[in-house]
Image 1 (cartoon, rainbow, N blue to C red):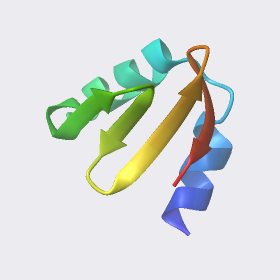
Image 2 (spheres, rainbow, N blue to C red):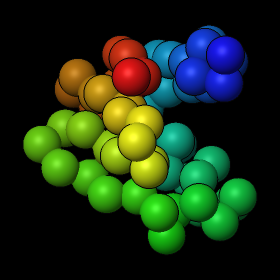
Image 3 (spheres, one colour):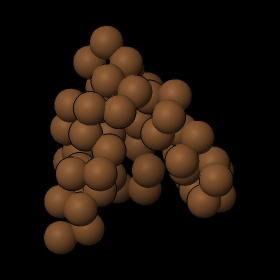
Length: 56
């Protein structure tokens, strides 16, 4: 359910804004960016041309 809420809140946002949101909430220390995917723990934020298209 959390992924659904986050997806509806962040979908269509650009990567820079999402990273700023994570930094504000001190979650940026738990992130890894690799190959167009931002990993936050086991959650994958998938971007296309810098815009969030999916969360898995």
